[in-house]
Amino acid sequence: MSKRLIINCDDFGQSAPMNEAIMHLLEEGKVSSATIMAVAPGFEEAAAWSARRRKQNVGLHLTMTSEFDALRWSSLTGHPSLHDESGHQYKTVKEFEQGAQTGAVVKEINAQYELVKKSGITISHVDNHMGSLYGMETGRSLLPQTFWRISRWRLPSRFFRYIHAEDPLLGSLSNIERPVALASALADTFGVQIPDYLLSHPFGLQEGETYDSFKQSIIDKLYKLPDGVCETYIHPGMEDSWMLANIPHWEKRIWESRLPFDDDFTYAMRDAGVELTEYRYVQEHLKRPRVRSALRLLKQLIR
Image 1 (cartoon, rainbow, N blue to C red):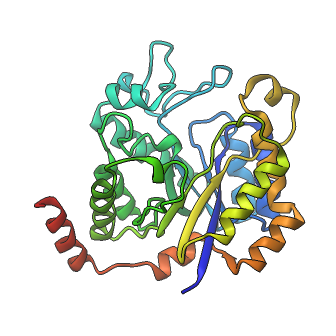
Image 2: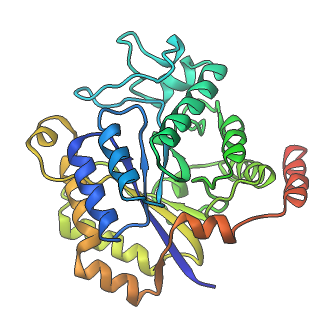
């Protein structure tokens, strides 16, 4: 068994400082990929750069929420059920799950895909901003509809089939084994390739946290990485006066743009035997037999 790690930069296209950091990381080959937000203000800049450089590792970041007070955006389709009273996408996942109509979500998913494709990007994979389609807040999962569309696009997707017990988010949630088994079996049945594990770390700045303590926490995880293909995601941003004034926990974004260039991190990747991997590997090597997967899904459903 080998240890492979996908490092994905979420929120490509969110803003100028995010774009600058992610472009630098992609250009230097320090991360596996990035996923682009078709609805965000910096989309055109990010898309034009990606298409011009013919990047093969830029995916689609399906975006149904708009969480920052100083940076709001709206859906592409404009359906009223996808917006709050301000006319922007919902700030929270819970509001989205409670308010969005399923048909409107499917049309928005399609619209975001078509816009990114039209921009000239060869889409590498698909994931989801803030996990809004997973049903984590109210239990209303839109993964079946999402996986179906992704299967039509013949792309892999961010999800996971195993739960890493030491993950600070997924490892702490109770009673998620069956939903995860159902969702992964559904992805396999539709022919959507997914990684083995999804690894998280706190999005915001933790009390007393410094760059050095953050770096050490990530390095420690490299040595405990399970066998198989894992994905983790970062939200890098360059130090910028606008970001410092408007984006909460901006320090963490600057740290995440710095970490992949850190010699200690590079050494730890090599010393721990971890190979930086792209979604192309997932697509080519993590296919599951669809008929067998359908039987596994049926068994899960009748349990």
